[in-house]
Image 1 (tube, rainbow, N blue to C red):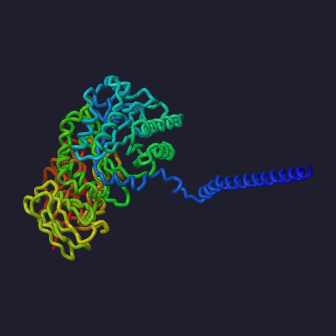
Image 2 (cartoon, helix red, strand yellow):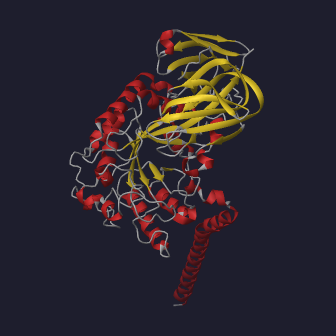
Image 3 (cartoon, helix red, strand yellow):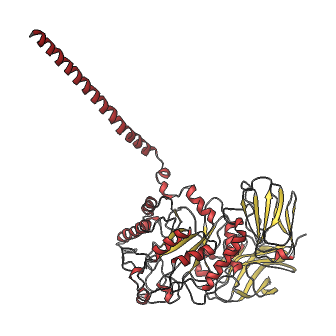
Length: 589
């Protein structure tokens, strides 16, 4: 019995030892587990403490990789469409009534405008046809207006009854178009207007309710329509606080991580959006010009659409400035894109099919835009786009690369002479007659690291004191006369719509002898009659009479000595005159 008792104590001791060991092991495992669980959290807390504001808000910017596809594509289609096409007036802006935060009013009574959708039945709408027209144009992405300032929604939102699916048409055109673009291999995005003149809470004491509504719609667009590549806000100069934009951007990036966002919600975002004008040459900040094919964003009967030359010029100049070009169409109330517009887009596509290698995937420069045209570059090739041949041989500044060969992509013959002082281009008649003479210069090393080089000739009007008879809507900073003498083809002097006459006066500060003028008109050939004058005492004397100016006007005349000169526009059509640049040049010795 003793032996058994002793053995029992030993077994009990063994059991205690094993239990104690197991307890120690479990305790150790718990301790290790707690380290595994809590140490990363502690580290994360430490990271949060040291994280900079910029690092903690990465959702405010797209990655360089996400921006690259957009930069490479260069050319997109903008689509403004809605019930307003039934009456052919401008979308949103022709609506009468109160415009909180903006002011002004339109011509169509609110009761009429807001109920147009009840008659809107575009039975000929074919999303795949629209996508095909964009592809035929050489466009690579589409931005569709989901809601503009008038508050009408062209998608099936659940947050308001003021929408396309409550029209007689009933279909979600946004859904159909997003699917058609995906099928066609086009990138797709939505335009969305934060301002909403229809919503009862917009910019009232209940604006917080409107913000909730707006963010809800953004969530819908980013959830119900597949992959969204672009969100294009149009905040009408509202601030980030007006829209709670940081929260809104967070919603967008969470639902669509690879989306790119424009700069019109009060934040810098991913790219700038000059409107109806070509942006300034800028390789540091991405930008995209948005522009109408006609005079209006929405469809307008018998609208004056741009010539093929104007269309190509705008695309090429935007690309040469290192930007993108978003070209607008306003479909008809039937649902079809007007035949004239579709034809013009296809003509652009035919041009791009031949010469697209000088556009797609390029960067602007190294020669900055000038009266003659622009340049683009890719690898070790520079593409010289001569849009306006000067009367004299084209001279460009020197580059620290050797030109190994030069070829004309567009026909004709061009002679290229490279010296230490610069590059001189001479062209035969056939080359000069081209809409855009494209000369490919193959270099002995990469063109991508050449610093941008200015090519704008020094005009004696540059930076001088200038006055005018009229400024568009008194918007002096955007459209004042100083923009016509700032040696930039990205800013312009503009006048009020419907104005037939206007003048631009420049004080040269001293009497100077000059014999040549270059004038670049924006928005087509609006000017039909003009004269160049100088002031002699209190009398204006005319030294040149002209008719049309157009995209590029250059004239030489007998030498004039004067201090104060004037561009006197005597007659225009289809809107007030608008001028990119008014330049005068001294006699070359």
